Length: 195
Image (cartoon, rainbow, N blue to C red; front, side):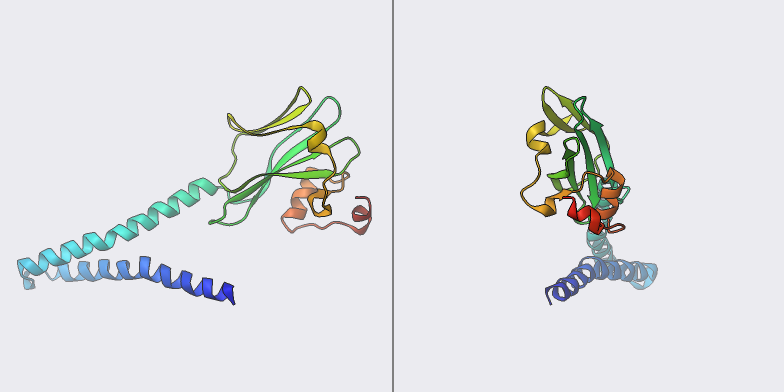
């Protein structure tokens, strides 16, 4: 029921913020084309109405451009991967959750032969273009560009999670994990029992 109410309120908001100003914009354009039939006061009123009605339209265009540039390319993917000389492996997956929610970003780490353990990095974020993972001094560091997002000790990061939902069997590749998260794959019964 809440989903229906949110959908209806979204349609009403869209109509009020885009539909009404758009109708007023074109109505004023039509009125201004009449030219000689309008008095100077009426003409000024229609010009002001056209200017005022264009503000929400420009705001909507600006928001759409921002959402497109912040979220492009609108797909989930593996942002980075690395392995330590001691055999630990890590990768970062960013899951596209929609234009409003953006990306959920998670770090997956495993010790040699262990399960993948998920660590949350970010929710409702933009696309991570320059993500990288570094292993040094017994720690794993995750960067988004030059910004350090998270640092964990390798032992803490690779330790099996408390909850089974936060770990994935270690025999899965990063691409298989991405497929599972994207809904294109699923855990096999054999793999689930190995956790």
